Amino acid sequence: MRTVLRSLAELSMTAGLVLAMFVGYLSWGTGEYTHRQQGDLHSELERRWNATQTRKLAASGPRRGREAAVPVAEAGQAYALIRVPKFGSSYRYAVVEGVGTADLRKGPGHYPGTAGPGQVGNMAIAGHRTTYGGPFERNGELARGDEILIDTAATTFVYRVTHRIVVRPGRTDVTAPVPGKPGRRPKKAMLTLTTCHPKFSAAYRLVVFAELAGRRARTAAA
Image (cartoon, rainbow, N blue to C red; front, side, top):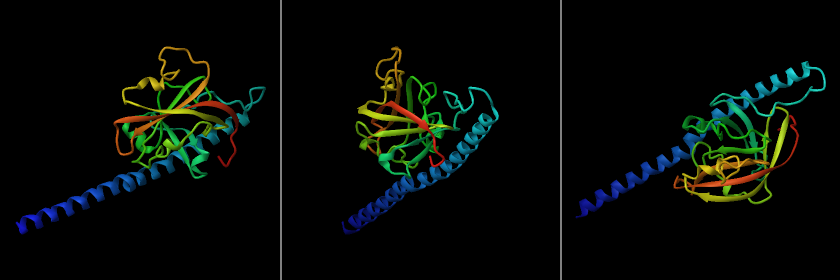
């Protein structure tokens, strides 16, 4: 009996160690991958934005300095920048185009076909909550009135949180042009952030809704 108990205790300790190592990989290992990818994406955005500004400076006439309504990016490429002042000045994630597995490992992903920054409609973005850097880990802290900033080449779009809900994964209507009302024509610019809920589970989705409150010229610091 002692031998059996000793063996069970050793097995439990081994299993606990393996589990701890696995959790460590999920939090650190995947996060390190995303950190490297984000560095590349930020550099990609800067190159594209600098090229856009150079083209504008070379242009002439009344349209000089005007920005295209929607950023252009292929699947997996950097699309825009998301910042949340409530989470501190270091919170800056490059958003990629696409929400596939490979896309979301790089950072938050823009749902293809949804509105672009500042556009009338619903700009929807998905992101991991715990693994791969957990860009949306603190989304449960967002409350009415909190700002979410979306940066493009020349403009910062300011959205303010209106509310948040928890839904089943099948509730894809939250990313509709009018969230929760598929088929209805939108009349305002909205932003929706989706992530898993609760942490370390995909049983539900935490959804944060926001509306466009203003826009301003993007500064170099952004």
